[in-house]
Length: 207
Image (cartoon, rainbow, N blue to C red):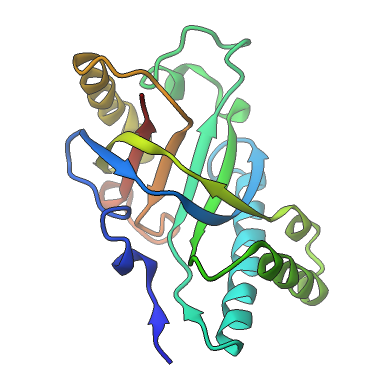
């Protein structure tokens, strides 16, 4: 049985250059869970666990149906309350907004042959096996980012504002406005990779 690897099928989605560029991102579907709190904090880690438990249950369920796939890279959308924290730019927000105030939507991209019913069935099976209440919060999610600015950030997450300043300068130069939530794709396993070697795609939908 052939195993579908989305990072190979959608190479342009999972690759970026080390400088800002304008790209078009196709509509995609995901396994998803939302939360609030600092990256690496308890709420964040617990939701990653619930998401991956559901993802692997879904994978083996689909494999039994003859449609196997590789569980894809972790991704995240990040935002904050812009009423409480007004006039922030994409490079100042990571520094000035307390980490505890950030909200997130964790994502794992899914093959097109997976549907919402498949996800619900996998959730039920995962919860029955693990009893993790957060599994109930996992959901099927679709997103169409379209025109976006992106670049590859290499190094610690704490240094992301340096790359975000480049993205903001690119946006201003080309007179582009924000049109969606800040998106990160974690190409490296940040639990096992040295901070200076981390590879993260930073993506900002624009119009």
